[in-house]
Picture 1 (cartoon, helix red, strand yellow):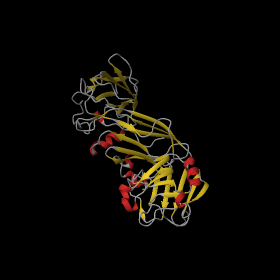
Picture 2 (cartoon, rainbow, N blue to C red):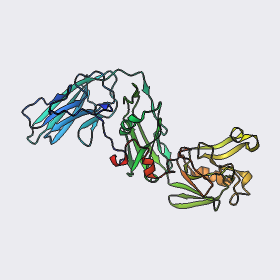
Picture 3 (cartoon, one colour):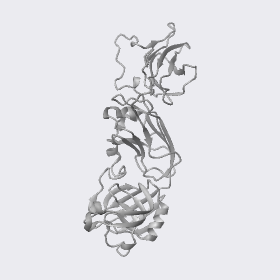
Picture 4 (tube, rainbow, N blue to C red):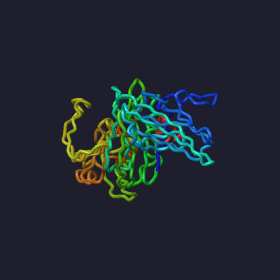
Length: 392
């Protein structure tokens, strides 16, 4: 069910815990209170009586000779805090950010094969709410239904320094039904996307959770909030355009729905070859290209059934003026021109996130010009992750 494994860095800082040579406890740590037990437990973070702990903190600990380990975290008024044990059983992460300025007590219990339980306990205080808090937001919201090419898109209010991106990524978990492998990739310092190895399976349920509230990201800045999103992938609607035949083939769940005549960009303004995604849809809009193309080539015209593919201005749209050339000659300024009838039909079929692949034109799609997550192999995409695929 997982795409990105959740792991926790000790103490929520870039530096890990020091290696203590004498086998004793670290300064500020707490050891087992029952010396006659076989099992032992030591809390390594947060330090005992610390008063400036990030709200994103995990409880990190060490145990010896333990067959069972548990962690409890309570607020000052005795309320239990829910959390999850890491797979390596060396840390425990609260399900959400802790309250700014609040005091908590962590208890780690380790039971040995002799049936006796040792406990270690630390009390700490969360730092005051910082002034430099960075918002975390999702492009998609709960209940969205999107196409099989839709990346999960998370944005940050400010740039995340390179050296902190792995910390952020480790707090981002995606689960799907059915399970599909995938990875997060940094599109820019302020934006990260997730895609599976192949197009999403039709009707997949997707849940992603970011436990980022209070996470330090350098320069005395912290991420402001946690985030969860539940959405669904729709039917597998895929469009393929072949410049050689001047035809678009539209399939849904593997079956051909329609073959559409198209006119692509002329040689001076060719369409991009590559895999793009429907970014937005407008039933009616106006194209004004005078600033971009100049007074000789520029135009301003009403457009019907427009579906954006690139930030640079390539769309699928109805073009009644080129219906005579569609299927035989390229005359557009880079868009995929279709007839009014086909444009209306296609507009009614597609969703945001549906993929389209254009083949055989004079220009290759530039990565970053739109949601170009699928215009590269999965291995190339994984190179933009802050955590190597082999470690996830």
